[in-house]
Image (cartoon, rainbow, N blue to C red; front, side, top):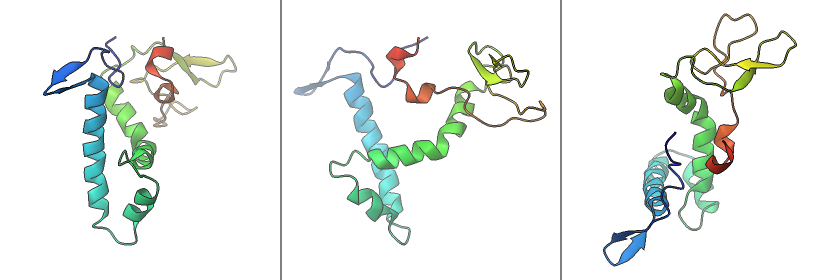
Length: 135
């Protein structure tokens, strides 16, 4: 199952004079990535950069991260599950037969009630649950 990318190992790695955990490394990379996105916002008019600047005093870009996730979570979910095929084991889709949830068998995605097309929904709430509480 792999380990949680955000929590990482608890061990600290030596980096120069200071030590940092894998979480610290990931957090600094996220700051850099979202800092670059923030800088790109300055090229657009009418102040999305001002909006994010007013909500962020320590340059963590939490509001920008949240907005980015809300805009991209379905695409990220599709990318993560595109090769899962029917192996996702949680009962997450309502099949419409009044018997409750059924398994998401179509690349871990639920289909609409007529079974004709994807609904492009994320079938779980896992992206909101911390990793250590999922299993």
